[in-house]
Structure formats: structure tokens, C-alpha cells
Amino acid sequence: MLRISYRNTCPLLIPLLVLLAAGCGEERDLDPYVSTENPRETLTELDYGNLDSAEIRLNMPWSGNKVSKDANPDAEPGTLSAVTTETFEGYDRVVFTFGNRISGYRLAYATEGGGGCDGTESAGEAPAHLVVEFERARSNEGGTPLVEDRERTLDFPTMVGATQTCDEGDRVKWILAVRSKVDYRILEMLGTPRLVVDLRHR
Image 1 (cartoon, rainbow, N blue to C red):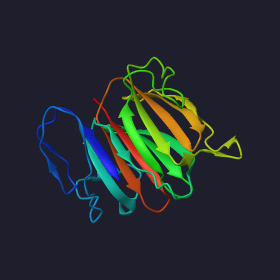
Image 2 (cartoon, rainbow, N blue to C red; image 1 turned 30 degrees about the horizontal axis):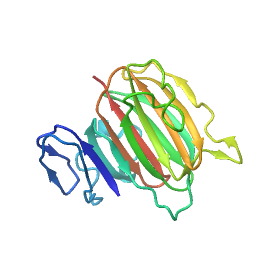
Image 3 (cartoon, helix red, strand yellow; image 1 turned 90 degrees about the vertical axis):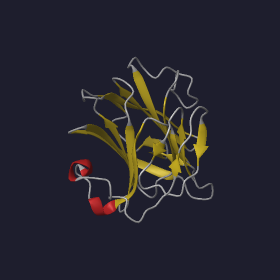
Image 4 (cartoon, rainbow, N blue to C red; image 1 turned 120 degrees about the vertical axis):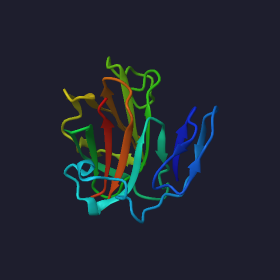
């Protein structure tokens, strides 16, 4: 189940979701039906970067709101096998590659702390931190990490760092350190299962 949280947004129109949500004031969760018939409809060649446009399964457009997708409790944990960081014209990109399937995920800016598996440790000194958390997932094989570079210092227009802060109890967490809170979007990819997170340049 995909959920989008929003606060003080009136109205909010999300392309590719068969839902027009108009509401103000309180925060609430939406459970929209996600259309996968043409997820490339609102994307341009610049948006693809080095992705194969034919493999885009889901396009969640630019937003600063919390986004989450429930994990399948009966499925085997997703295996996060690689993480790449790149910058393109207009956005910075992080690609989370899974060896078998994309697990459940949650993306939200940390309000305080955010580091460690329980979210109570410091996330670092950057002005803002986008937490990307995978449920029913792991990033190790018998205790050996699958992603080599788990703490990265970056000099991108938006991102200044990317760090894995948790890989235990079927939970994997990465924190993306950014210069300020910016809108982000996500793409789910077919073929090799990948979750793509783009952070917009200011």
C-alpha cells in the first residue's frame, strides 16, 4: 500500500495517481490507486538521466511530503546489493539496487535525530536529512556488507553526503544529507529492481 502524507496543501494534484486530493490543515494519509499504465507520461528525456525509460514502473512526482509503501510480510526480505550516487542537470540521484525485489520503503525528512536503527542518533551536521528506510530488507550476506561505500561525502548541488546507518532486523536505512530541504521524487524500475530517489536542485 502506497501512502502519501501532506500538510497544509490546498489543493494537491498528483499526476499518475487516480486521485485529486484537496484538503487543508491536518496531516493525513492517502491510500491512492497507483496507475502503472503509462508512468513515463510526465517525464522528459532529461528526467531519465541514464535510465531506460521502458523500465520505469512507477513515477511519484516531486514533493516534500512523506512517502511510504508497505512491505509484504510474507515475502522474502529484499536484498539491497548496490547504491549509486550521481548528479544531473536539475537534480541529484541515488539509485538503490536490489538483487531480488524492492522491499517496503519510507522516505521522510528527519525532524530530529534520525540516525541509527531506532532514529535517535545524530544524523550529522548537514542542514537537512532525508531518511530512506527499507522494511523487510537486508544489505549483507552472512554479516558481510553487500554495499562497499556506506559513508559518502559528496559535493553535489543538493546532496553533501549519503550514509547507511542501519542494517539489522530486516531493516536497512540510508540518510541523505542535503544543503536544505528540497522536493524529491521516486521512480521504481523494472528489470533489475531499483528504487530511484531524485533530489531537486534549488
